[in-house]
Length: 79
Image (cartoon, rainbow, N blue to C red; front, side, top):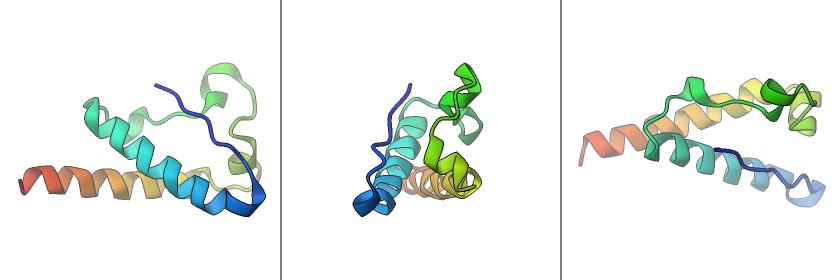
């Protein structure tokens, strides 16, 4: 599974929040773990997602996805 981030400055933070939620939902729905979250760069060597990598925010992004993923898991466990 893959999805793109449209990197527009005026809405970049909202783009990240949307992407975090989407990534967590897809991981959860397909029975994958946070360790399955990868960058385009991991497969192609291309520096993508460029802004996230260049700004040093990949780990922050992953942490936010993990938090949202854990919230989904907890909600499912609690019915």
